[in-house]
Image 1 (tube, one colour):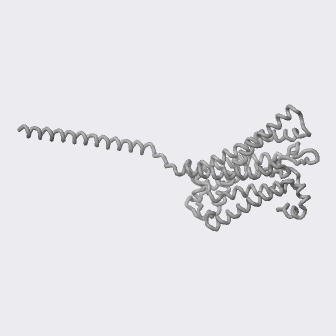
Image 2: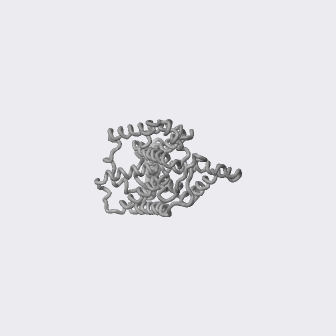
Image 3: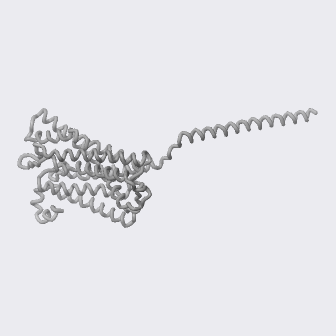
Length: 353
């Protein structure tokens, strides 16, 4: 929104700053956001988006483990994720700078420290850490599971869970299916053809970041932890909550545009509105988010409809009862057959007499 007024007042300047495809990207974003806002308004108006249906038991209990075990798992994950991000932030910036572009279009910024919070990966990792930490503390508290006083808190945490699960899938998918293969391709060319206008020097930093222990953890374990949470908790993904994950993507799109306007850097090349790839990048990420949300929602519904398997003792009891019934039926059949045979013999004796 900081860019929009100046864009309409001085479109030539802003098109040069943000890229020639920025008007098309802007149309895509505004159309999607109008649909998102309309869906949220319809959900609130119809009562499908409300916190009145949320219970603290939905958040704190599990069918797989006890409440205490679930809380300890969540708290352990939350503390571990907070430790990783705080460790990286407190280390400060590294000597190398993160650069984007070539020649006169090249722009550089520090990398590390608080600058990490300008990446979408760290946004999502921090959101996960806060969710796991808060839910873990609530699970260990003395709040009764039948309490009805925490509906707004449960609703906010539930939406946070839905958003973080979806974005964890988006981050891992985009990194390992899009970014990593392209980066590997360029690095292999750099090894054979040498540095091209300093591009290989820039890519070397991205390559080290991607394959560092922290990079591998944030781009892999984020999805693993959220899928574990999906398996353990009792909160099915609400069909009418799909706009909330999109809101976070919209927020980062606005942030990255303003960030680029002030610093000249895009962290993700498919968001660069000066290249036609942006026309596929924005809708592509949106499609991955929506597909992931609806896929895991339907997967939960499928398994929720499956009948629970009976305990082993009940199965044995049922089998024993069935066996006894079959035995009784067989015995009765034999006795009935014997009686019929005796009756026939008696009739034959009477006829002979």
